[in-house]
Length: 63
Image (cartoon, rainbow, N blue to C red; front, side, top):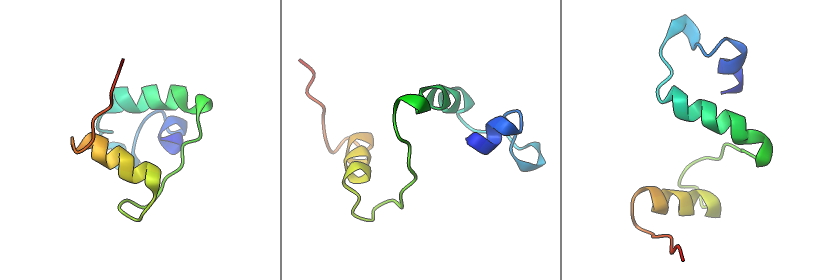
């Protein structure tokens, strides 16, 4: 996303960036947290929990 921002939110060959509205929100929040790319399904606890949340295998209890 950082290179997309530098290129006026364009991908190579002017290809569309899918979910650009969400990507821009994440970009604007990036200063509040560390964003680190990790290989999926490789035992990274945070990634595994995020996958479980995304696929509905885990629920968040909100009180």
